[in-house]
Length: 196
Image (cartoon, rainbow, N blue to C red):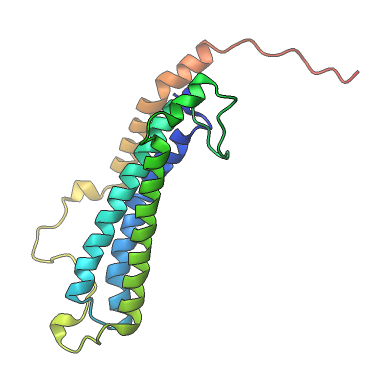
């Protein structure tokens, strides 16, 4: 797979869908909790609704942009380059076929992401500086704590060596066959380097 997608827009799309979506959205969710907690301000109902709109627009924008990048990458569109038709090569022309091309879809997704980022900045500024102070106990944002009424975790799950063993097993299961193939089917080495 790496031979096919190396240095194409697939890599950019993959990065955005794996890091730009779940990791970024985790930070956004933490922001919605952390700012009211640190400032002692209310996260008002209107900010909550706007927070949902922000997360939904981020999801839609990322879905459009990343999907278009994946498709373009599979078609061979390079990353880190400006527009190029490669002298109207048929493979390059596939990237721009039709009115609603993947480049247009990518741009629409990026525009929606920009709108979502502006909504996030608005929520942050409003919550930090303009939201009313939390005076009632139910308005104060508390640090989330686990319920102490629940059962304790089984003792055997707290054993560190069990988790290390599981991790080692998974690593061996994932890498043993590919490494074995690389070792057994290795190409012959190159000739020695001669300086003169």
